[in-house]
Each structure stands twice: as C-alpha cells, then as structure tokens.
Amino acid sequence: MNKAEVLKEIIEQRRSIFPKDYTDAEISQEVIDEILHSATLAPNHKRTKPWRFKIFKGEEKAKLASEMQAIYKTTQPEQLFLEKKYNDIGFKINKANVVVSIVVNFSGMVPEWEEIAATSMAVQNMYLSCTANNIGCYWSSPKIVDHLKESLTIEENQKCLGLFYMGRLD
Image 1 (spheres, rainbow, N blue to C red):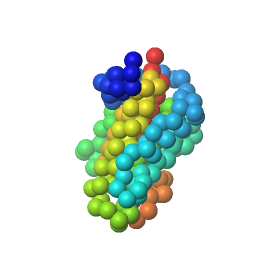
Image 2 (image 1 turned 90 degrees about the horizontal axis):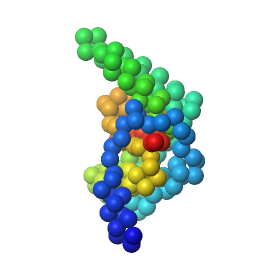
Image 3 (image 1 turned 135 degrees about the horizontal axis):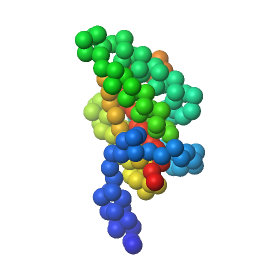
Image 4 (image 1 turned 90 degrees about the vertical axis):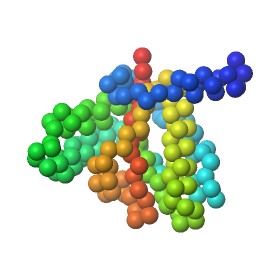
C-alpha cells in the first residue's frame, strides 16, 4: 500500500471507542509518547502551539476519577443527581488505561477560535495515531471539567476542552 492508501484506511477506521470496550492491557510509554508527539505536529497560526496536555495514569487517574465524581455530586441539584451517571464517571476513567486532559492556551496573538481549532486538530492527530496503533479512544467534554482548574493547573488564559480517554483493544 502506498502512503495515500494507508492514510485513507486510517481515516476511514477512525472512531470514538468508549472505555467499556477497552482491555486491561497497558499502553506502553513509547506509544503514548508517539500519540502526543503526533498532536504537536498540528498546524497552528503563528506557531503558538496552544495545546496543553496532562497525562493521567495509575494513582493520578484514580484521583481524577474520585475528584470528578465529587464535583458531579456537589454541583448537581439533588433532584437531578443520577447514581448511574456518578458511577459511570468513575468507571470510564478507571477503565481507560490513560486519560489526557485537553487544554487550550490562549496566547492573545491570534483569535481564540484559531487556537481552539489548532487544539482540535492536535486531538484529531491523536485519534489517527491511536487508530494506527489499535488503541481505542474518545474525546469527552463533560461540563464538570470546568471545575478541574486546580487539578489541571489551568491558568487564567487557558480553558479545558475535555478529556481524551485511551485503552487497548483486542
């Protein structure tokens, strides 16, 4: 297969695959590094490189799950609180081998939409690299990420656009 055919196949196979379908097999640090490196190759106006990623694995990932469950519990009015949703938050994070926060850094050098677009292209590169490595992944943007400013050390000129879940597939 030539490069164009390989690329077409990867693009056609790219899907959001959810944690319930991930195996317990670990993603090697080498593959994680490759996925994140592919993100940094996304085009960005004036080379602002607006994406910021934080990797959650192991104990940090478990803390993230607990924190997000606590945020959900404290921010939901009692009549809207759903036990299933509360449990799903923990399940998804804990079932994923790796969770990556997606944060955009607004430089002030270009319009904000351009930096959001560049960050989105970086995530698309991550999707394609995951597909090429037989890793399931999906980008989730729950409202509760707005409350993760301290955990993600989000600065005044930054915004969390969601979480990127990754896990091995059979």
